[in-house]
Length: 223
Image (cartoon, rainbow, N blue to C red):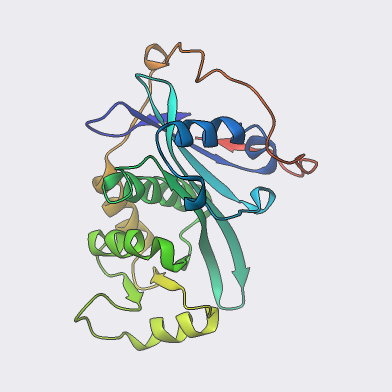
């Protein structure tokens, strides 16, 4: 199932599960972003096999990828966490609403299907996007705090447990119902109708992932 980002011709596709993720044409994703001007040294190495959730953003008019968000889901005695493993955007969209929309979309899908995670974790390179999302969600806390904000002790403790200087968006204080309401208001996507599907050859390209995918262990999900 695909969704259209409100007020744009950007199609968002959410994927999870090994079977669905193995079908992503990663060379095509990277080619599109490179052709758009994203420098190769902007990307850090990513273990594609480790990804748990992916959202692809495609420009419907051109059929080309304009962004991708990949997250790793981890569980521990302290709760469930989503680690932003890779966030690649077409130049010019990195400081705009697209990355926030990708984060909002994946959170809606995960919370609806599996329940609300306890926290989202980001490396320094994605810290701004996580803070931007935090400002749009009521009752959430973040560490390190935004400039001038007061340090929230229980979020600081969680960030210390995670370590590596990562930014932590703590979702524990907000209810699942309130979180979903704010997220849906934030990006306002709608389901894509069949007539909206692009017919360009670029979008229909096929190909394997960069590395041979592992054997599927559960049914993949696309939404």
